[in-house]
Length: 260
Image (cartoon, rainbow, N blue to C red; front, side, top):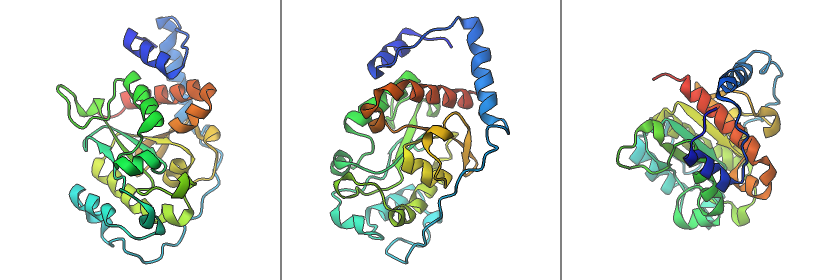
């Protein structure tokens, strides 16, 4: 793999040391990795399936699958389908260009996200920004000279913060899943980066741990999906930053093979 000075600086900020292989030997290694990721052998072991939770009729609209962006945002802002609405300051809909080629899906808003109404802020958000910048990507919706291929759209599975940042409950995920599914359908991304256990479980409907799902190309609504660790986890476990970078490299190679 060829590295430039900007990428090296970004990786240094992430705390990752990269050994640079000779350019002639790099491409076959990466190609073999991608080939292994999509091979039938890699996907042969069936994953345990997470059962879907029956969703009680609440205040969520019935026609989410037909909404456009403004209507969907308004529906999320007014949603009272689960108890999380009672403790929120803001709903956290999503951020980024609505024609971005990349989509990042996280788990649930934290305290700062709830206060600002934007996903992935604070230290975890800063780390995510460094990770994206190392790939030449940005979450900014507008920018001079930026193309959709250089931009990402970021959303969470849950649109409201769980109390005390506890783990999402199955019924909460079930109530929010239609909103995320519609975001994906509207965005039509060319790749989804699923970050964290609950994002992975929701998108892939599996209880298999992230460590076993990494390095493979999954599918959600026909879109390639790559599994990786949540930035908050990486802040607590910096030794796994190199693994996360491997996941980003795989995602980049998948994108290079995507339709123009």
